[in-house]
Length: 267
Image (cartoon, rainbow, N blue to C red; front, side):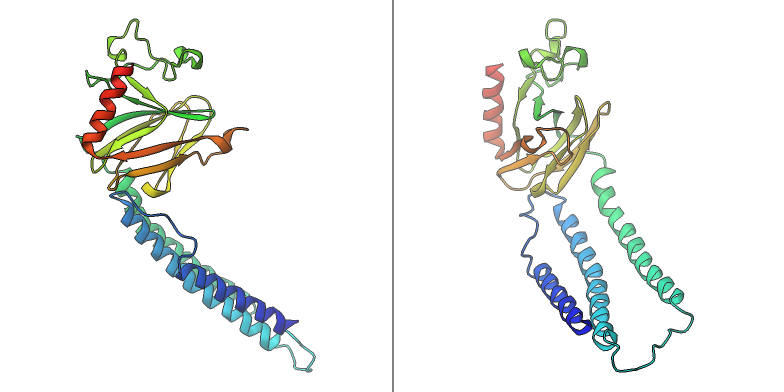
């Protein structure tokens, strides 16, 4: 059984390594300005952890092949000091790897989440609720109306709790169920949750950010390619979680301006 186990471990190791090397299941095309840094960090993580994975699994296979069957009468040998030195050594190696990846990866993370947004960013307000996303653009006055949670009412499509009767800046706000943005222009989203935790996840943008009730969370990025991509919620938010999705459509600036003008006329 020892030799059989060694063969199985070796096959699993080789197949797993081949899957990652050939990118059989990999991330979709990157369409964000910051995505290359994330992809580079992911490749470094997979390389370093992959090397340790292959070495440890092959070592396991070698020991299982040589010592798995004890019918030859050989005396069992004990490693000097027992198992403790080996466990300590493994903990140090793995710990050093994790700390190194953490320090290197924190720079990439900080470049996205700790860097202030471009002052010329297009501001878009995002509301998440069970089980939909809604997106709000400022109207001709360039200002958002104040949000009043107590006024939120799905029946009359007041998803953000606006008060246009008393707030003139809210009268021209544009609310739509899909996110439409111009290409190569910085975008600043403000994320709000009406009820429970949700998430904003677009693999092509290399972005995943949670919505937290009671918090207004900023998220900024720049899309570098036109196209239409799915936005999904990755937080289990209720029975309809599986169907909570929207789309982000990246358009040339001229087409975006025309789209925004048409939506403003429909308000």
